[in-house]
Length: 357
Figure 1 (cartoon, rainbow, N blue to C red):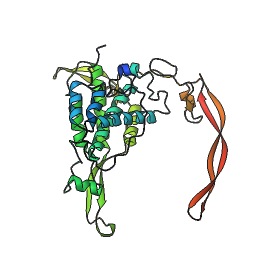
Figure 2: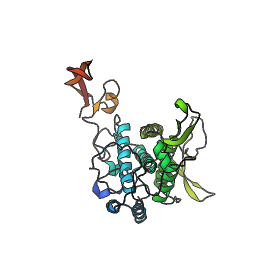
Figure 3: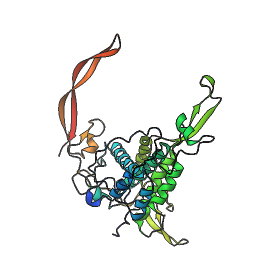
Figure 4: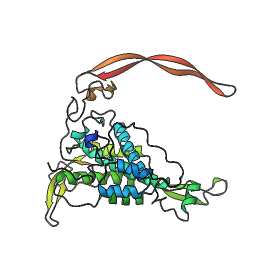
């Protein structure tokens, strides 16, 4: 198999791999994962040269490193994007056989599975989202709020109406990842499609939010701005696209002289296949079961499950162990004068279920 280029988006979906293959911004996979930080009000641009060191520590192409060094705040935003993508992937697959584990990620990314497709989509979505929010928070020197009519940036921040700059984010991302070139490699076409699908998922979540300035809260005067949906909503959309992902093959466009993706007909009636829709997640290889330990995942032995909802599927028919445990919680709470809540500690028995070996 032909090796992918150093860092178009093949690197973007390497969400924290072991050091030997950490092509995605130099992360090792051992960093503590913390929730995506809330972006507060605008702060002064970084005056120190600390960001140069951050850029040098990231495993970027020469062009990407130059862009990073010219843009204070970008290195931090790249790390935020990695953490955001990893956390969302793990949240969406926490009840699945493949739970977005780092173990086996290297081998998995070499194949065109549905899981690989999701990683590419969630990675590009996370980077798009993080860049747009970093602009509106004043963490990037070369971008600010999204265009808000009749409002300068300082006024926008003061009124709390600084729009998330998705326009700058997508334009910068296109430049950062490099130009889109035609390829005869089916896998490269798949990766590019899923990358664009992740960006589109963020764009679909862009909403208009308005704030009223009229007397007594009326909306006689109001200011509106663009705001991204919480990334959890984007993750949920991508998971739905994963569940309905389309297996594709390739065909040659005679008019353009290049390879294109081809999807089978969507109904049972005989019909000619067509190109997948922009909103489809696409893959080329059937996924393994992920039931047993292997090169793609650690398997499901020992995983917690719900007896009613997920044990049968998650445990792959091997059955599950049942364990009783005592759980303490606050109960019989009363508001005392003045002004606190007083509770008792209660204990109840709970049953925990884990998949057998």
